[in-house]
Amino acid sequence: MVKRVAVLTGGGDAPGLNAVIRAIVKTATREHDIEVIGFRDGFKGVMEEKYFQLTEAEVSGILHRGGTILGTTNRDNPFKYQVSPGVFEDRSKTCIEIINSKADALIVIGGDGSLSIAYELSKRGLKVVGCPKTIDNDLAVGKAQTFGFETAYAFATEALDRLHSTAEAHHRVIVLEVMGRYAGHIALYSGVAGGADVILIPEIPFSYEKIVNKLRDRLSKNRRFSLVVVAEGARPSDGDMVVQKLVEESTDPIRLGGIGNVVAQQLEKLTGIESRVTVLGHLQRGGSPTPFDRILATRYGVAAIDLAAAGQFDNVVSLEGENIVPVPLSEVAKGIRNVNVEGDLVKAARKIGISFGD
Image (tube, rainbow, N blue to C red; front, side, top):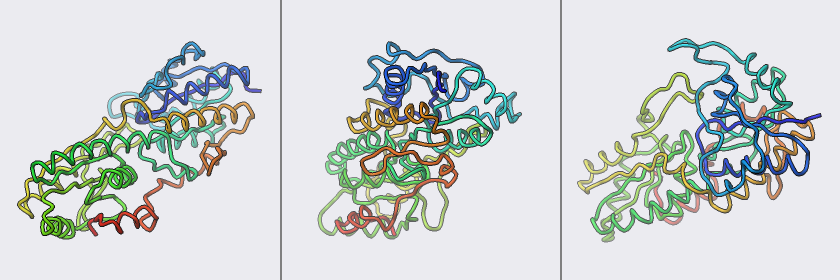
């Protein structure tokens, strides 16, 4: 019987994490008579045995807050744990022993990196329930939208609204670089919602010639400005993604970034049109979650603790249609979920004249 559950948040932060934590604690306390503890800073807190009890008082007033009261990190993988600079060891056994000494089960709120770790730990006997989180909306687990995604693309859409007026006033091409890693969901949704003329995503390698043709077509119709949204993982058909740096000890060592500057420079060179770039970066992760993300995160938190209380481990909660259902944690091994290039949204974007540079 589950009497005590541990919770951690791992990977990059996302709007809605606090709403999940709040829902877990309230449901555990009121419905299941289960104690909840929270490990600080993801798996780092596990390895350093840093945790505290989560009570209803601790989670009061956090529903609307961005970030996570537990703290998070995308490093400190227990299977590749840094014991000294440049030296890594498998400390997964120790990780499991620590968790089992503190709680009867673990709820991991994270993206593909954290959930992959959770899956490997579950294969070694740890009782785990996963809760999917990523602003990138790229988890292969289930078919559902992840919380944090709507808040992220809503902010990117607002940025495009603001950039539209300055691009028009100065007759410029303005490039907006957004997050998303190897998937273009944020770029696609914000680009359509924000009236972008060109959307560049990892799933559709682009040609500068095609983009230039689009910009010149607009000029021929006396539209003297253009908005280009580019996902950080986008790449030209004859080139590679732009890598900002490598972080060896991270569960996701490749840090993408810089494609926006490359695109803006190339377009100005090829067209002679003054071009500027805006990189949203971590602004997409911050701030208060939208009402949709607060509700989705709350539902995920309730479902996660219900699964733990029922002993249904090795599952991730997922929104399927109108219902939250358990999906095997093993699905995280399938990789990421990319934009469906033959999907309705891409087709609709093309029909209204948006170019994908192909």
